[in-house]
Length: 403
Image 1 (tube, rainbow, N blue to C red):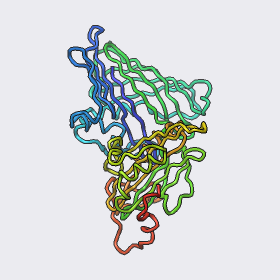
Image 2: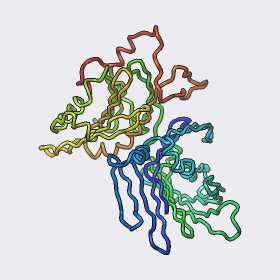
Image 3: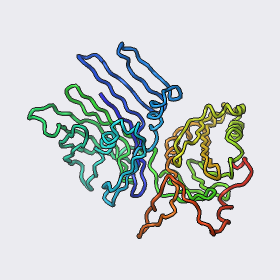
């Protein structure tokens, strides 16, 4: 048995593939002889004597920790044409992670994303999976009668796949599962698919309802220009000279970006201020130890998840997500806080927004007819002679109370 948990982050002409976990299990005569689960926060494996071992990312050896840190991050950035066909691909994982059969994982993550024919309730698609052992066969897609309560279309998936070039009568991998399609996004947004045959069981878990991104805008941070993409369910709010980006997540709940010059007053001071805002005790430098690491703009950023105590008047407890990323000449902060249930539901969107930030390159030009300009994880330096008024309005000086 093998299982892959993954998501696709969507933008016009773009698709980013994020892997969240990979699990493998092998049995002989009904006895499990090999089992492992690898994710961002934990690695689990079975020793030869049958003992189950677990290690957290912070305690893992360096090579394993590098592999674990890639989960939850973008593995590959794809460029697509108007018909959704891949025209270019940029792999963003290092060689230690690429060794985990990156090509096969990416192929699996896209295999069941077939177009939905307009006006059809049932259709068959011939598919070939390019992997270590290529598989080919026909998949049957059947719509369920009524959409879900949130307007999604449920589709049953079935069929069979056989190894290309195998002898007649060779084992078939039977396909069974279901997927959900969002007509507004024109994308598959959730799926649970199982491929099962003699001695083999493969599961694919897709969940990207919380992660699709769409066109946003740009802001400056020091001498750098940064482009952002907006989670599709969030709305753009007014913003001001302090909030470079201000997005409405729910009623009276916002996610916003603040840029402070230099070190922004220091990470520990900012983290302690966030803790005090929730009624928590300041921890000084120790606050950094509880921060997670998230790759943002091609560098490690610090992510805090904080829960405040229950309110005395019966109001819901507050949860806060705060991210700090060190740039060349400034500190970038992204913050989301509000009722715990709302913030927890928005966490995947928050991480997608943060990891979707990109530097705009010096030679970027908008293509004819509109669309997104090319972007990079390396910063574009501002040309000499450009007005500094935009820089001043986009970078908050001195105070650490802006966020």
